[in-house]
Length: 272
Image (cartoon, rainbow, N blue to C red; front, side, top):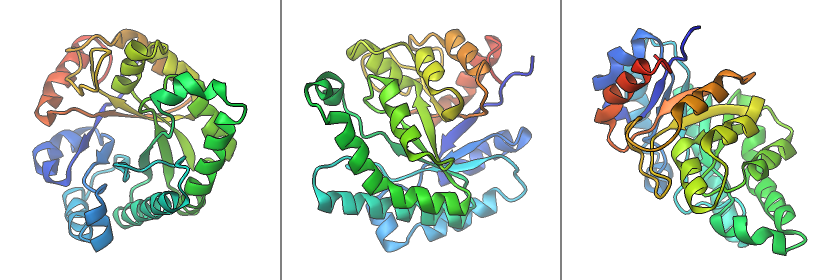
Protein backbone atom coordinates (compact mmCIF):
# COMPACT_ATOMS: atom_id res chain seq x y z
CA UNK A 1 0.00 0.00 0.00
CA UNK A 2 1.31 3.43 -0.96
CA UNK A 3 1.22 5.82 1.98
CA UNK A 4 -0.34 9.25 1.43
CA UNK A 5 2.05 12.12 0.84
CA UNK A 6 1.70 14.80 3.52
CA UNK A 7 1.95 18.53 2.83
CA UNK A 8 1.98 21.57 5.08
CA UNK A 9 0.56 25.01 5.80
CA UNK A 10 3.36 27.57 5.63
CA UNK A 11 3.94 31.27 5.33
CA UNK A 12 5.78 32.63 2.32
CA UNK A 13 8.69 33.36 4.66
CA UNK A 14 8.89 29.66 5.57
CA UNK A 15 9.40 28.49 2.00
CA UNK A 16 13.23 28.62 1.91
CA UNK A 17 13.47 26.35 4.99
CA UNK A 18 11.01 23.78 3.61
CA UNK A 19 11.68 24.12 -0.11
CA UNK A 20 13.66 20.85 -0.45
CA UNK A 21 11.06 18.93 1.58
CA UNK A 22 8.25 20.26 -0.59
CA UNK A 23 10.06 19.53 -3.84
CA UNK A 24 11.19 15.98 -2.98
CA UNK A 25 7.66 14.60 -3.35
CA UNK A 26 5.85 17.61 -4.84
CA UNK A 27 3.98 17.89 -1.56
CA UNK A 28 0.75 19.88 -1.35
CA UNK A 29 1.16 23.36 0.08
CA UNK A 30 -1.24 25.81 1.72
CA UNK A 31 0.10 29.34 2.00
CA UNK A 32 -1.16 31.24 5.05
CA UNK A 33 0.18 34.72 4.36
CA UNK A 34 -2.86 36.26 2.67
CA UNK A 35 -5.72 36.58 5.17
CA UNK A 36 -5.47 40.02 6.78
CA UNK A 37 -7.75 42.88 5.77
CA UNK A 38 -4.84 45.31 5.90
CA UNK A 39 -2.92 43.30 3.31
CA UNK A 40 -5.91 42.60 1.08
CA UNK A 41 -7.17 46.20 1.09
CA UNK A 42 -3.80 47.70 0.15
CA UNK A 43 -2.78 45.04 -2.36
CA UNK A 44 0.46 44.64 -0.43
CA UNK A 45 -0.10 40.91 -1.06
CA UNK A 46 1.40 41.28 -4.52
CA UNK A 47 5.03 41.24 -3.34
CA UNK A 48 4.72 37.99 -1.32
CA UNK A 49 2.83 36.44 -4.26
CA UNK A 50 5.78 37.24 -6.50
CA UNK A 51 8.21 35.81 -3.93
CA UNK A 52 6.15 32.63 -3.56
CA UNK A 53 6.06 32.12 -7.32
CA UNK A 54 9.85 32.54 -7.40
CA UNK A 55 10.42 30.07 -4.54
CA UNK A 56 8.07 27.49 -6.05
CA UNK A 57 9.36 27.60 -9.61
CA UNK A 58 9.65 23.99 -10.80
CA UNK A 59 7.48 22.54 -8.01
CA UNK A 60 4.50 20.46 -9.18
CA UNK A 61 2.41 20.02 -6.02
CA UNK A 62 -1.10 21.37 -5.47
CA UNK A 63 -1.16 24.94 -4.19
CA UNK A 64 -3.82 26.53 -2.01
CA UNK A 65 -4.20 29.43 0.38
CA UNK A 66 -6.00 30.00 3.64
CA UNK A 67 -8.52 32.66 2.77
CA UNK A 68 -9.62 35.57 4.97
CA UNK A 69 -11.37 34.42 8.14
CA UNK A 70 -10.98 36.66 11.23
CA UNK A 71 -14.38 38.08 12.18
CA UNK A 72 -16.01 36.89 8.96
CA UNK A 73 -19.38 35.18 9.31
CA UNK A 74 -21.19 34.05 6.17
CA UNK A 75 -24.42 33.75 8.15
CA UNK A 76 -24.37 37.13 9.91
CA UNK A 77 -27.84 38.65 10.29
CA UNK A 78 -26.33 42.06 9.45
CA UNK A 79 -26.51 42.72 5.70
CA UNK A 80 -23.61 45.20 5.80
CA UNK A 81 -21.33 42.69 7.51
CA UNK A 82 -22.25 40.07 4.92
CA UNK A 83 -21.23 42.53 2.19
CA UNK A 84 -17.78 42.89 3.76
CA UNK A 85 -17.44 39.10 4.04
CA UNK A 86 -18.37 38.72 0.37
CA UNK A 87 -15.75 41.35 -0.53
CA UNK A 88 -13.05 39.49 1.42
CA UNK A 89 -13.85 36.26 -0.43
CA UNK A 90 -13.34 38.02 -3.75
CA UNK A 91 -10.05 39.48 -2.51
CA UNK A 92 -8.93 35.97 -1.52
CA UNK A 93 -9.73 34.76 -5.03
CA UNK A 94 -7.67 37.65 -6.43
CA UNK A 95 -4.69 36.19 -4.56
CA UNK A 96 -5.45 32.66 -5.75
CA UNK A 97 -5.54 33.75 -9.36
CA UNK A 98 -2.30 35.72 -9.03
CA UNK A 99 -0.55 32.77 -7.37
CA UNK A 100 -1.98 30.08 -9.60
CA UNK A 101 -3.53 28.48 -6.49
CA UNK A 102 -6.35 26.01 -7.02
CA UNK A 103 -7.87 25.93 -3.53
CA UNK A 104 -8.95 28.42 -0.85
CA UNK A 105 -9.84 27.45 2.73
CA UNK A 106 -12.68 29.36 4.41
CA UNK A 107 -14.45 28.91 7.74
CA UNK A 108 -17.79 27.28 8.51
CA UNK A 109 -20.60 29.53 9.74
CA UNK A 110 -21.86 26.97 12.29
CA UNK A 111 -21.09 27.79 15.92
CA UNK A 112 -21.16 25.91 19.20
CA UNK A 113 -24.26 27.95 20.06
CA UNK A 114 -25.90 26.66 16.87
CA UNK A 115 -25.11 23.09 17.86
CA UNK A 116 -27.20 23.40 21.00
CA UNK A 117 -29.85 25.87 19.87
CA UNK A 118 -30.69 25.59 16.15
CA UNK A 119 -33.30 22.93 16.73
CA UNK A 120 -35.33 25.40 18.81
CA UNK A 121 -36.19 27.26 15.62
CA UNK A 122 -38.23 25.95 12.70
CA UNK A 123 -36.06 27.92 10.25
CA UNK A 124 -32.69 27.82 12.08
CA UNK A 125 -30.76 25.88 9.47
CA UNK A 126 -32.68 27.40 6.58
CA UNK A 127 -31.60 30.87 7.74
CA UNK A 128 -27.92 29.85 7.80
CA UNK A 129 -28.25 28.28 4.36
CA UNK A 130 -29.97 31.39 2.95
CA UNK A 131 -27.45 33.91 4.27
CA UNK A 132 -24.45 31.74 3.36
CA UNK A 133 -25.69 31.41 -0.22
CA UNK A 134 -26.12 35.16 -0.40
CA UNK A 135 -22.65 35.84 1.00
CA UNK A 136 -20.57 33.06 -0.53
CA UNK A 137 -22.51 32.41 -3.71
CA UNK A 138 -20.76 34.98 -5.94
CA UNK A 139 -17.34 33.70 -4.85
CA UNK A 140 -18.34 30.09 -5.57
CA UNK A 141 -19.46 31.08 -9.07
CA UNK A 142 -16.22 32.96 -9.70
CA UNK A 143 -14.17 30.07 -8.32
CA UNK A 144 -15.93 27.64 -10.63
CA UNK A 145 -15.11 29.82 -13.63
CA UNK A 146 -11.46 30.07 -12.52
CA UNK A 147 -10.92 26.37 -11.72
CA UNK A 148 -10.53 27.01 -7.98
CA UNK A 149 -12.04 24.97 -5.13
CA UNK A 150 -13.33 26.74 -2.05
CA UNK A 151 -13.27 24.35 0.92
CA UNK A 152 -15.39 24.90 4.02
CA UNK A 153 -13.45 24.08 7.19
CA UNK A 154 -15.13 22.99 10.42
CA UNK A 155 -14.46 25.42 13.27
CA UNK A 156 -16.96 24.94 16.10
CA UNK A 157 -19.17 22.50 14.18
CA UNK A 158 -20.61 19.82 16.42
CA UNK A 159 -22.60 18.09 13.68
CA UNK A 160 -20.61 17.39 10.50
CA UNK A 161 -23.84 16.58 8.64
CA UNK A 162 -24.97 20.23 8.84
CA UNK A 163 -21.88 21.54 7.07
CA UNK A 164 -22.06 18.76 4.48
CA UNK A 165 -25.69 19.58 3.74
CA UNK A 166 -24.76 23.25 3.35
CA UNK A 167 -22.04 22.42 0.83
CA UNK A 168 -24.34 20.03 -1.05
CA UNK A 169 -26.98 22.75 -1.29
CA UNK A 170 -24.68 24.76 -3.59
CA UNK A 171 -24.48 21.85 -6.07
CA UNK A 172 -21.10 23.12 -7.29
CA UNK A 173 -17.77 21.34 -7.76
CA UNK A 174 -16.21 24.64 -6.67
CA UNK A 175 -17.37 24.21 -3.06
CA UNK A 176 -16.22 21.19 -1.09
CA UNK A 177 -15.41 20.18 2.48
CA UNK A 178 -12.36 20.65 4.66
CA UNK A 179 -11.76 18.99 8.02
CA UNK A 180 -9.51 20.35 10.73
CA UNK A 181 -8.70 17.38 12.96
CA UNK A 182 -8.06 19.48 16.05
CA UNK A 183 -11.30 21.42 15.64
CA UNK A 184 -13.24 18.17 15.28
CA UNK A 185 -11.50 16.77 18.37
CA UNK A 186 -12.37 19.94 20.30
CA UNK A 187 -16.03 19.53 19.31
CA UNK A 188 -15.85 15.87 20.33
CA UNK A 189 -14.65 16.86 23.80
CA UNK A 190 -16.74 19.99 24.37
CA UNK A 191 -19.95 19.39 22.40
CA UNK A 192 -20.24 15.61 22.56
CA UNK A 193 -19.64 15.57 18.79
CA UNK A 194 -18.48 12.37 17.08
CA UNK A 195 -14.76 11.51 16.94
CA UNK A 196 -12.54 12.79 14.16
CA UNK A 197 -12.76 9.71 11.94
CA UNK A 198 -16.56 10.10 11.90
CA UNK A 199 -16.09 13.60 10.44
CA UNK A 200 -14.03 12.01 7.67
CA UNK A 201 -16.68 9.36 7.01
CA UNK A 202 -19.43 11.99 6.96
CA UNK A 203 -17.56 14.14 4.43
CA UNK A 204 -17.04 11.23 2.05
CA UNK A 205 -16.28 12.13 -1.55
CA UNK A 206 -16.80 15.84 -0.82
CA UNK A 207 -13.63 15.96 1.29
CA UNK A 208 -10.97 17.96 -0.55
CA UNK A 209 -8.71 19.20 2.24
CA UNK A 210 -7.60 18.21 5.76
CA UNK A 211 -5.72 20.23 8.37
CA UNK A 212 -3.68 17.74 10.37
CA UNK A 213 -3.01 18.90 13.93
CA UNK A 214 -3.09 17.13 17.27
CA UNK A 215 -5.02 18.34 20.30
CA UNK A 216 -6.44 17.32 23.68
CA UNK A 217 -10.22 17.55 23.00
CA UNK A 218 -10.35 20.78 25.01
CA UNK A 219 -8.68 23.53 22.96
CA UNK A 220 -7.39 24.31 19.46
CA UNK A 221 -3.83 23.25 20.24
CA UNK A 222 -2.24 22.73 16.79
CA UNK A 223 0.28 20.41 18.41
CA UNK A 224 2.72 18.12 16.66
CA UNK A 225 1.14 14.88 15.49
CA UNK A 226 1.33 12.24 18.24
CA UNK A 227 1.45 14.73 21.10
CA UNK A 228 -2.31 14.86 21.74
CA UNK A 229 -5.14 12.34 22.02
CA UNK A 230 -6.54 12.06 18.49
CA UNK A 231 -6.87 8.44 17.33
CA UNK A 232 -4.73 8.82 14.22
CA UNK A 233 -4.94 5.23 13.00
CA UNK A 234 -8.74 5.52 12.85
CA UNK A 235 -8.46 8.86 11.03
CA UNK A 236 -6.10 7.52 8.37
CA UNK A 237 -8.10 4.32 8.00
CA UNK A 238 -11.16 6.44 7.24
CA UNK A 239 -9.17 8.60 4.82
CA UNK A 240 -7.94 5.50 3.02
CA UNK A 241 -11.50 4.39 2.29
CA UNK A 242 -12.56 7.62 0.61
CA UNK A 243 -13.32 7.99 -3.06
CA UNK A 244 -11.45 11.30 -2.94
CA UNK A 245 -7.92 12.65 -2.88
CA UNK A 246 -7.93 15.40 -0.22
CA UNK A 247 -4.89 17.55 0.40
CA UNK A 248 -3.40 16.43 3.73
CA UNK A 249 -1.87 19.53 5.27
CA UNK A 250 0.09 19.72 8.53
CA UNK A 251 -1.12 22.90 10.25
CA UNK A 252 1.05 23.26 13.33
CA UNK A 253 1.37 26.14 15.78
CA UNK A 254 5.14 25.59 15.72
CA UNK A 255 6.17 24.90 12.15
CA UNK A 256 9.57 23.72 13.39
CA UNK A 257 7.71 20.59 14.55
CA UNK A 258 6.92 19.49 10.98
CA UNK A 259 9.90 17.05 10.95
CA UNK A 260 8.80 15.52 14.28
CA UNK A 261 5.25 15.11 13.00
CA UNK A 262 6.49 13.48 9.82
CA UNK A 263 8.76 11.15 11.79
CA UNK A 264 5.77 10.06 13.93
CA UNK A 265 3.51 9.49 10.92
CA UNK A 266 6.21 7.54 9.09
CA UNK A 267 7.00 5.39 12.15
CA UNK A 268 3.30 4.54 12.52
CA UNK A 269 3.01 3.68 8.82
CA UNK A 270 0.43 6.40 8.18
CA UNK A 271 2.07 8.87 5.82
CA UNK A 272 5.21 9.91 4.01
